[in-house]
Amino acid sequence: MRIVSVILAVVLAAATVGAVEYRYSVGGGGGLVWPSGGDFFTFDSENTIGFAVGHRLSQNWQLDLEYAAFSFDNDTTQRRIDSVGTLFNNSPLKLKSTRLGLRVDRKLFDPGRFLNLTLGLGGGLMIWKAVDPGTNTTYAVRGEKEETTDLAASELYLVGQTAILLRPTSRLSLHLVGEADYLTGAGAEFEQAVRDARDRLYLGLSAKLYFHFGPVDVPEWRSDRSWSDADNRPAPARQPRRDSDGDGIDDASDRCLNTPRGAEVDASGCPVDSDYDGVPNGLDDCPGTLANARDRVDIHGCPVDSDFDGIADYADNCAFNPVGAQVDARGCPIDTDGDGVPNGLDDCPYTLVGTEVDQYGCIDLTMLSEPMVLNIDYPSGGFDVDPHNRTRIERLAGLLNFVKDIKLDINGYTDDIGTAPANRALSEKRASRVKGILVFLGVEADRMKVFGRGETNFVASNQTAEGRARNRRIEIVFYK
Image (tube, rainbow, N blue to C red; front, side, top):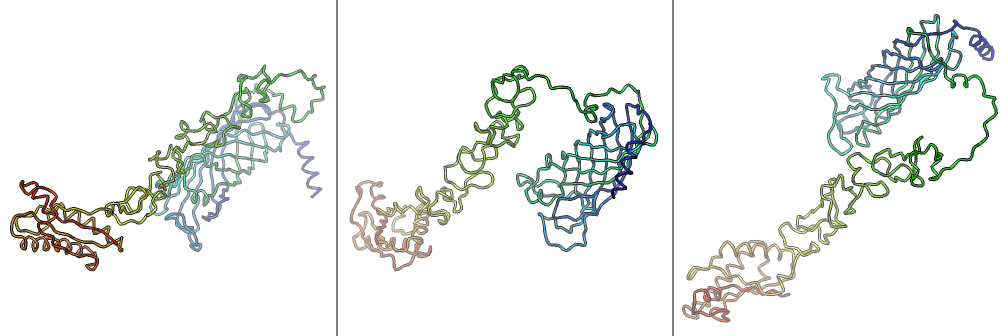
């Protein structure tokens, strides 16, 4: 191994092709690429092809614009052990990807050498989608806000690259490249389960052939010399510096002299606000605020939640709920029994639908604190209950079916028209009809007593039709 290292060092030191003079490059090639970093799908390495155009910035620095395309097929023979929505780990799936990026490369040795090494960094846009290979339709998954969305994205990526560069002539070069693309997630808005299942790292090995051309007046940067020659000049004497706002930028170079203490600043001394919510990085407790929440953040840069229900105002369809109410994913109150008192504030969350309740969501027993009077519109000598009062009786039955310890006296009264015995019998018949309705609605018969009071206990004058109508009534008295 030591002998190989010595030979390689000799080749790097001696092998040159003379001065390298060009400004532009075009090239292309192919190789293998494979995904990594996920724990759900199983993809094998696949072929990739691509091309690039370059602009030489200086003797050792070059800027390349790259395009590449590749696709992967999921292993459908693996055992089905996991799923994300309707997708299983052995679902037939083709992941189609197109990469468009920009990268800066730096040659580590004299650019005239036959054999050289390069390092490169950059980024760009990865456009990908997951399709069913049989129908070529894009799979659907749940998005970041629980909506249905395509399993596809135009996503930002970062790339790191190293290459062995062989230059047989000044106009041709062969690059043997190893690179890694990291998908940042910017532009891919999916639920957490999908993000966890994805492969976020693409590794590749490829060979690329470049042709170089253009004018020869390429400048030499000072930084190019500093990579190989140490600057032995004595450091200049330190000059007194003034930094009024303590952000690390001298006042002479600081375009924002009143930056708040603790805020991150750029090279010109102005605050950096990555999420554009008005609170600079370093003072922002929530630096990744979404775009639709930027106008509704507090002084710490976090989304406002006016009703303290755990749903920020920007995503809350019901932003002013009573404090303590349970809410759904849209921020609206949950009312299991539909009684108008939300869960969390409802002391009786399973009240029968339609039952009157108090402010705490429990059955309202105030109606049982005094007799219920039914002024039934009886025809002369009749005993049937009119629809309005029948509805009242139905509501009473619903309450009595919950409160089992309440008993009832059902008293029937008439006006003074007719004989006393006849009126007593008619009033008892009318009271019995009310009892029969309550029994039909589920109230136990042994909880009720019927009394025909006849023409007694008048509540109005019998000299008018209105007064006689008020005297023809049913009074229900409640007791334990």
